[in-house]
Image (tube, rainbow, N blue to C red):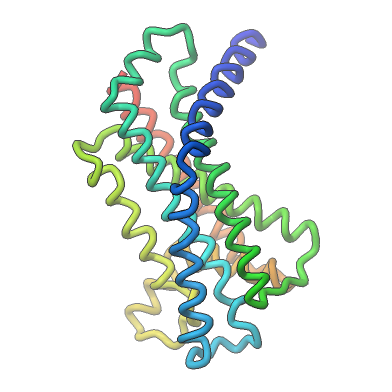
Length: 255
């Protein structure tokens, strides 16, 4: 059993290294993923910020959690793209003929998504600091934020694996990310939900982004975390489990 585990992690590290080399050879992926959320942050803070009433003194602090989720939702589309490219080039069939653990290829793409999105998140936080973002959160709160963002990234990345394996075109492989990117706009990411019409408010308060945003916002501001953290974790874990099951089924059909 121990030998099998060592073999699995050894194969997975090789696949991770392969995918990361593709990232660093084409840094425009991370740059593209980072620029759009930063553009949104600049737009909302310096153009719309004065007209939006959030009840907080610093709109950057209010805005940042939603911006981070948009960045992650945008970044995972590249996982679907890279996986689709591997499928079309017959890479899966090549690896299948080699003595490697079958699922390590998928894990290589998933962990690469985790690393590349982490880089994007760090860059966005640095820009937010320049724009006036300040946090009174302690180390434990920051670690909790990192954990939630990592779990959110893993959940969406496994969602991305499904179209990456099953799509018939590159557009089909990446189009799934557009509704996910749009979700933060119908949440409490930019404005409090109490200002929304009833139907929109009900949707906004009962979709996963609002719970995740409210949890991260409370943690970064050093405020007590409400039951939103359990709702956020339930959404992330639920999406992760369901997506993983369907992704592995799609992969087994492919191989």
